[in-house]
Image (cartoon, rainbow, N blue to C red; front, side, top):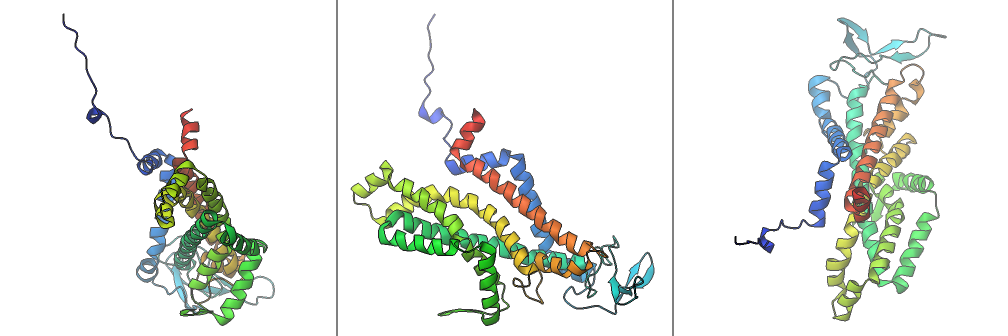
Length: 342
């Protein structure tokens, strides 16, 4: 008998997957990540369809007062704001949730506006501010953190002083102070001009106050990379700073910044809701979940849905973003994968 042997050639081996493809494959197998992403996309799509709901289903203008309007409940025409029957009989009580998507599904606020339509429109602004400010914050923080950690010296000292100045203030106190000033005068920085009522003001304010929270970890990561052998080898062979940053530093900090993105989006949404609740965030006639909670503050005992509905949306969206961020961190962290395999 003749013994035969099989030699496995490199071409017969399965091609190795890169770290990004491995992370995507891990996310695709993570049920929590899939469920969180699906819920987030559902919220985004439903909020984007706010004009469709307001104009073609509810037939209402969520930004115009309707104090003398009427609606249909169980086939009967009733006023949107009914006279108060308790106490001295002064004031009016908005109609409560009807369960009918065509007629005040979640009821009305104190000005007779459809809460459901305002909830969807408010979600558009809350998501826009949360996601946009998180993106601006992470990009700016990554840039400043890389510059501080890589170049060191005077540059690092100046940027650290800048981070310390921002970090010395409580986040909400700093955001409120900037909002009060900029909502009065607007923002003008050379060719850049932002009007007082623009949504760009809360976006830029929230992004700015959270820059140190992302830049500090990025700087620490770059400092650790700066002493690694492959960086020192690139410097030793005369590689330019731009080439080293582009090919060696940025790819290694990208996973950290990507993990921060959904987490900062959740934090920024909560900050926007707090600022809008205090009337220093989104300004009328625009709406956000924070402004709707403020609208429902005086109706907590009679029509709590006005405040509870946007509050629940803030909680659900923030929890979804946090769960998604945790899943992204687990997928991009090699140590987490090793712990899972063990």
